[in-house]
Image (cartoon, rainbow, N blue to C red):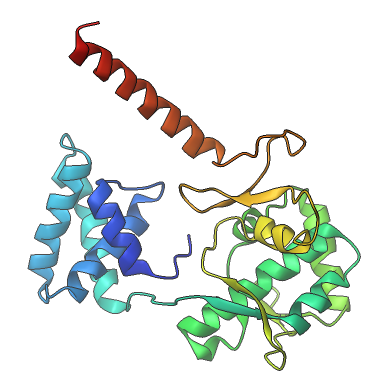
Length: 261
């Protein structure tokens, strides 16, 4: 499941851009909840708005084929409130502990698990800093690409260091983060859950003259410079750079067409 801290703001942007995103089921649920929070109190009304949104995204979409997904989105939206979190604060003590770990992958994983634990606690304090995300989701957020064996080793090291606690149930892969510490000043605030591993690295290299990580000026995602040694700094992530280049090319062609060139 993708994590969005301010779901209604995100949903409004998707409506404006007429986009189903990479995970249509999640998008539809958030759009449905957005309509509920904006005065549509009956399921029938929300379903009608969701049908319209789907057809705006894809005029050729078949509503009967999407019926199950649309009904599930509406039902789920009425069950759960929209997440509305401005940011999650990471303290100096927490970051010092993470930086003391022996290995960048360990640091990225610990930081990501800490962010997830704080997210779930903010959504529902009853979680008590337990993280129930799938391992592949966690590794993707941490920007770690390694073998299953290596992943298990990383978790084991964090457990042995007292930073994690595993569930006693054999078939349960949830972990509890045990190093949440709010007793020191805030050192870093997280408002975007994309590329958490790179966000940590950007913080880690904050005092370096050439920080190899940066935030895209268009979409805000933290990425790694393609070539940090270049004199001219990169401004956009690869996806945004491609999109902007295409749009500039289209604009250029349209201008020439209008001028009759």
